[in-house]
Amino acid sequence: MKQHVVIVGAGFAGLELAARLSDTLADELRVTLLDQNDSFSFGFSKLDIMFGRKATADLRLHYDEISKEAVEFRQERITSIDPTSRRVTTDEGAYDADFLVIALGADYDLAATPGFAEGGFEYYSVAGAERLRDTLPDFASGTILIAILGQPFKCPPAPFEGALLLHDRLVERGVREAAEIRVIGPMAAPVPITQEVSQRILGALQERGIEYVPKQVVTSVDARGREVKLASGGSMSYELLIGIPVHRVPEVVQNSGLAVDGWVPVDRTNLATRFPNVYAVGDVAGMPVAKAGVFAEAAARVVADDIAARLRGAELQRAYEGAGNCFIEFGGGLVGKVEANFLGGPKPTAQLIGPSRELAAEKEAFGSTRRERWFGS
Image (tube, rainbow, N blue to C red; front, side):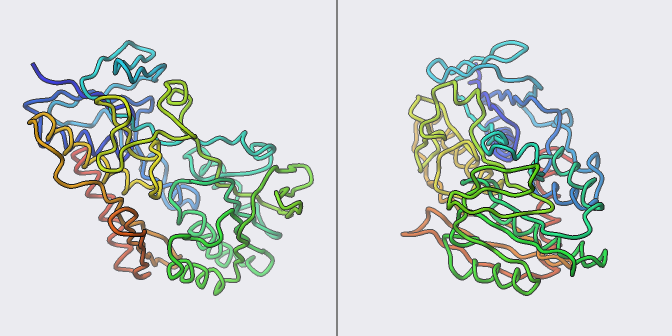
């Protein structure tokens, strides 16, 4: 009888894990992949939506098109997770797993910053990116404030990509001189693990007249007065507020008892939780790595290898290193690539390659290869 793997969440981690298990263990496992949504979209596609470069419908990859051997996708909402019994309950039924993998990612907590939902915009969700897309044409002058409202947050380059691309858009519209773009955040530098990459990003911002204001924690938003209140006691005014929302584990994960201090603790080697045969991968895991799809994908490959090893009574041969590449758009059709390794050495390392048009093509290829691998299209 085949062992049953239940994967909760069909983002980067869930899709890659399902594909890898299908490719390597279809004869020994059956996989149930659960997600409340009907489709997947890459995180970087939110920028395409925000700036009207592509239609939302063209960026959705529908789960019903998954055709991987031994993998069954079900669109259901998770209502409870019992990590002790490895039982998952949904609005449609229940699933008992031999191996349970939590890959539900991070949710956005707009209410964590009082006033933000009323006074700000975000482009980390499809709906948020669409709303901002429809608002940007009305902006003609004043300050655009991009505020990083908490740490950790998904895709560390994204706030700076947004600023650089906003600069281009305002130049195209002929209103750049009437606008100020500021990025504020709690970090001392854009990429805290490396001064070199941070300086490259800061240089790109400065060339375009964009200010980065470090070590700023936003405590609330005054939507009527159009200003943010800071933990330092000061404030900053804005005409248009774009926030990177506070991130948290989904409520169903919090209620399951899996999370400790905000995230799900896992073994750095194989992403196993403290519950037998239960793993947590991707943004939901409390790992000292960037919360980005490429790192979730790499973690999923390690989990697949660990499950395979355990089925054969062996041990995992290669531990998770927290290594991956993040693309960053610089505007003007140029794309850079941050190569990072968080766990493979004595300290985290990162370097920035580019930007170049060749890397823009590589970014396109990155999406195409995943689309083909996960969906066969």
